[in-house]
Picture 1 (tube, helix red, strand yellow):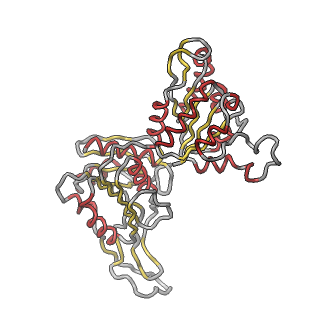
Picture 2: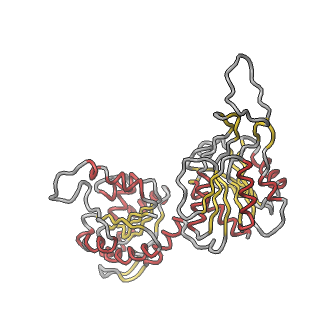
Picture 3: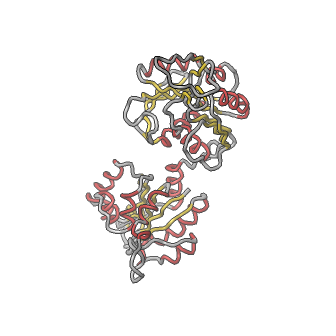
Length: 398
């Protein structure tokens, strides 16, 4: 995973070198971005030696270098698109103010505005600056936008004063990064089988029945589970998504193929999460040749496909079984009914008519329905965040 580490101009900037090493120990690829003020406290060469890559110090190339080209002019966009997280440590009062008010004055502040990755800031400054109402208001704005803040420690400060403002310990910052990225190891030793995407049922050699599923929720679950040290078997219908690194990927096309694969591999799993949107019906007699256009109506006879979730639910054993329910009406009623009929431990239900909760979106709005009768509505979250909330609950009921 790739993260950008922003280093700003404070005495604590030297501690960022130790932070780089700890992040690398977590198998993270670190790109350091330094403000001009940070270079007054520690040199870019230090970070270049630690990371083995260029340290970004200027918006349009190094001062005194040849004129900026197109590549350097849009580098902030390239970095913004490829990182999984932006970490700023230490974060001065000045950079927090720029972030909070949307002011892009250099590479780091422009990167903040350009990235959609989660952001973590670890402030460090004089106690009076930390306690100033302007700083606290800026932090409140950032927290409201979803920025994760690692509060500073209290103690003796470089300015000679005592109080809050000292950069949080390296381990506290790393712990926050791991939590935001989902880098827990609480699924170590567990195997999680996940289905994802749609299935396709042939009508003839050029046409098929399918649905609007993109596979994003299932792939987010696979990514989250593998980051939490699970062995992940991902049984996927056709999608255009990149396969998460480290998963055991098994591509399938039809519901029958998905059923056969799941039945074959389910005995390996401690947890089965059926996130795929399988076709409930298929043509009873697919045509071997392309159906030609003709006047009038065409009648297509359909038959039910195998109910994979119900088949697994009828089997007893210690395995946790999670199903999904995409609904357009009576969400709670339908989800509770499905939970009971399929003998699942959890149903993750969403109303696909809600904005931000339907197919092919990067967010979801779900309610978790548990066998013990609990209902857990979640706010609109990224699908990766939803995935981690589901996995948290799986652990709780294990």
